[in-house]
Image (cartoon, rainbow, N blue to C red):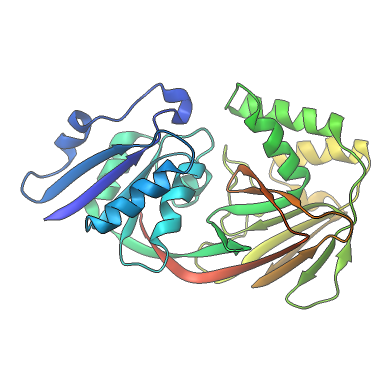
Length: 295
């Protein structure tokens, strides 16, 4: 018997298409698949439900939601033999898109049923894990505005981007060390990616791979407001490298330090996260998560 547990975020994608056991049953074989559906009720509840499912000897645990739900579920599965399934139900669905998992529910369920497993890398920032990307600077502030918006759509994302441009303040000094190299000072954006997509088919690191044992790092130096608008256009057309102030690196370790602040505003897999320290250590755990993907 293959025990498959579905951890559902009921408000993902504005909650318009909730998942039910009746919908799941036709895709699986009675006597072969044992299905359990659990619904998260608050932030981080999906993590508790996943831990419960591990104790219940689940073979596959499916995150049903967006990148935030995936993060909560997948964090518990790192270094185990339990496979992560993904049913994309969020707005951006960046990791699912990178893994070629379709948003059409029927096709995503077929991937789970077929049980083709691959191992992917996992990023770590000060002990917290990320699967798509993490960042500080402009993109962290952007996510903060996006989370306060009622529109969890591409239009809402663009609106949050415009708000962030208007509210941008003087950058705080920040040093960056990449694999022990000489640090760079005071950037506008630092984005560290494990995957090649942020969601909504947008990408700042199109060459990133989930299976190369490397983090793709994008650093954009301090720029004026006109250049910020140009950057917004380049993000939409996936041509950030056209901005001369941008530099890309691959690394296994990244160190960020702030001397005049005791916290970092960051985004982790598209969710705002305040970290109360003036230093961040970001690293990669190579092929440490089992994921169900299309063949």
